[in-house]
Length: 140
Image (tube, rainbow, N blue to C red; front, side):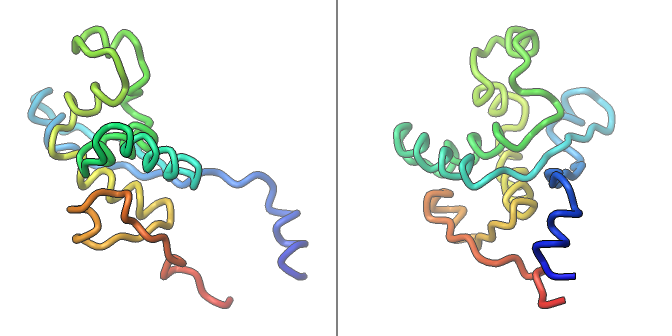
């Protein structure tokens, strides 16, 4: 069976997800707390790049935007949750809930998405990320 036939049989592709322990939320809630993240699309990563340029192109802005697209639990778009924390956007809620922990969360989102980055790129912001073929790809 060739690759086209295999892809046709595979059906719709699901986004990869992962569960991460959040130290910041665990401290806030007083109990062990995990979040759920998912891979982001190339279009979403491009949107991170474009929006970060418009917001000062800082590494932290890029990190928050990446988390905004990749965190699925808690739902950062939930208006009641935003209202409770006195913020008006998912990005602001991300900053409030995760603070500096947003950096490792965004790194894991990028890993799930197949985008690799090195520490220097993260320090300089995600706008400098170069995507590469994930190391898990092989010629099976």
